[in-house]
Length: 251
Image 1: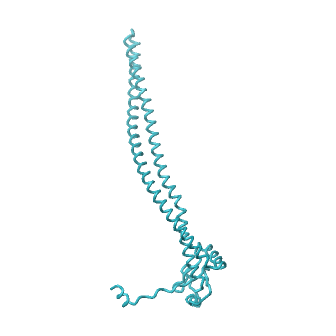
Image 2: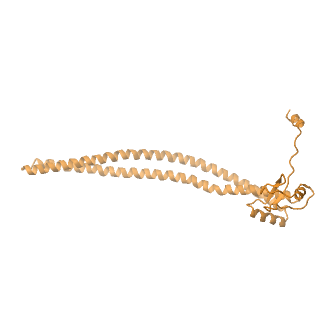
Image 3: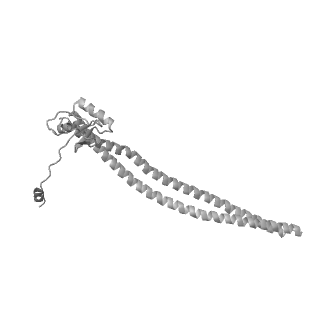
């Protein structure tokens, strides 16, 4: 194996882990924004319910005033009917009384509808107030969890970044540049392990003499996959434990 390969393998492992952490770190602001959006939606629903209730209360007062005004007109026409002398005038006032009473009935129906609607809006306000307490409690717990995860991810990222500096220091600059060029071309994966004489990244078979050189400990040459151009490496599988020894270890 080329002397720099073990450092490149370690570097790629660090880079892939760092890439995962950077993706995770980039997701935290979005996750926090989603938590805030749920709280904002709950607040908006409460504001809507309160506005609807306020409008209903205003309408109720208006309809209450309408009822009183029509009742006042009906009383006025009735009082006038006691003072008129002719039947025509009396009939006219009675007609006005009937009209006013009809308007009273309509106004009272509208008032009843507003009262019933107001009760429904009051229930909606109470439900929205309860919901926002629950959402805010969940949001508080959610933010704390996300912030804890974010801090832990950042801590690990900083540790791995320091380890990467050490790994990079052990690799010649030209080899490192070569690694970066290949990694950039292949979404951060510059190396490919060979298993069963095959590149594990593109599944193309490796030439027999290349495979033999990869297995040779004294080899000082870097080989590339003829298909995907990644740097190839080979790791000897761990020796299988004999059945007798396995039984002895488990007993």
